[in-house]
Amino acid sequence: MEQKTEFLEIVAKYCDKSVEEITPELKFRDDLGFSSLTFMTFLGDLEDTFDIELEEEEALKITTIGEALSYLETLV
Amino acid sequence: MEKKLYPLNVGQMLQYLPIRETGTQRCCNISVFSGLQTEIDFGLLKKCIQDEYRRYECLRLRFTAPDEDGYVMQYIAESDNRDIPYLDLTDRSMAEADAYLQEKTFEEFNEPDIPMVECTMVRMPEGYNGVYIHIDHRLVDSSGLIVMVNDIMELYCHYRFGSPYPAPLSSFEEVLQQDLKKASNEKRRAKDLKFWKDYLTEQGEPIYSDIKGPRILQESRRRHGDKYLRAADVETVDRSVGVADFHLEPEATQGIMDFCMNQGVSPTNLILLAMRTYLSKQNGGQEDITLRNFVSRRSTHAEWTCGGSRVLSFPCRTVIPPDTEFLDACYIMQNVQNRVYLHCNFDPVEVDKMLKDLYGAPDNTEYISMSLTYQPMPVRMQNEHLAGIPVRSVWYPNGAATKRIYLTVTHSSNDGGLIFDFHYQKAVLSYDDMQTLYYYLMKIIFRGIGEPDITLGEMISTI
Image 1 (cartoon, one colour):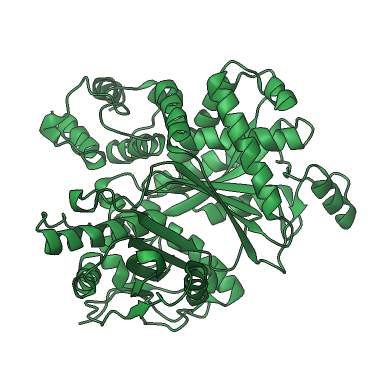
Image 2: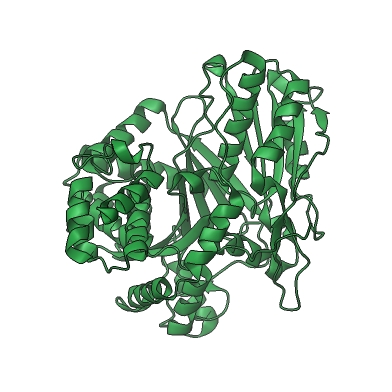
């Protein structure tokens, strides 16, 4: 639970939504306005915060909040 | 109160190094006029600019004198309550007024511990009124400057028309502290270092390409007596800058933006692909092309409005066979850039040094002839009270072109169309060269978005 909250707080830093408004079906690019640079910076932020190593190819397939959370759960 | 000193972040350091090398701050100046074609209450504008000195922390940055190794530290002055000068240039033509402001661009901020920005209210010919901002690049980059201009306009609308007071801008100091913390994260640094080592070695030494064709590299090979040389000489003596601006109509621009949105390709990568395709065409179909992409590292809310210079640049190398379809090539470009973005907190100066150490290219040679920066954020008068009023934004070059061709692509404040702003070294290139380059970039982009399955080889042989 704590991990999910921390994840959502990171997402909120990058977009115009509050933690409560960020739902699993939201798409990073289309719904939250992430550019390529923003998304990649965000991934780097996840790596540093959760002390994980993302597989670049896997990470680049992520399009929604739910997918990102599921992927994160496999790594932490 | 004792001032708190901080080192420069990597983006600021990138701007500072040319000052250190040339001994003059001029190469680090940015100057811009931004105004509206309407009457302005200059008393009110003065109040807004003074407010901005309070709101936008980065405007109060000062630098210490260099230490024995030539490095400076920075700190934020507690306040800056200076008067704002006023300049009336209405007795001149627009060209004369621009020439006057262009000349002011060369004024230097060379002393330590002094303000590094000067804002002047200007009444320009043809009814344009606004502000001329002359500022050291370490305080803001182009995104930071646009945030500043937009904020001043929002303040003006608040005081003049009663619109809501704009939201606070984020603290430069807090973001700087985060930057410095990130930079000292050893694990992150090790990851980035490994990435850049792999990136620079996996395809061997890059090779130079030029819009003038292979003869530029051949001349350098002759000069250095090395027929295998892959880097070309850089003009270092005469760095005077030429400027060529081209405006793409809003409808055509919309076509580009629609393609990017529908195909999930960023405008940056589309333009980079067009640039590398033209270089390939001019160099006998060369598949291996390296460009330089400048990105403003602003992703979080705080980073967007904290000011400072967050522009970093990295080599963007692609090797694309001629049978690759245009759309696939867009994705190849995008994948390369995405990999780079994940590691773009790394110091670009260190990347260039690694490249030099790896392949030992002679001093003052380069693999890259063209650089790009795409600026998605326009100087936009969002406030309803300013809607429809013509805007004039002029960037005055600081007189020093350190890159052979530097293309800045922005969105026009007036109609949203794209502006292609080429800065080039006049010693080696001409306005006509830029006109031809722009013509082919447009041809490649529109042929590609209209016919995304065309191969690059076909494109090169038929445009």
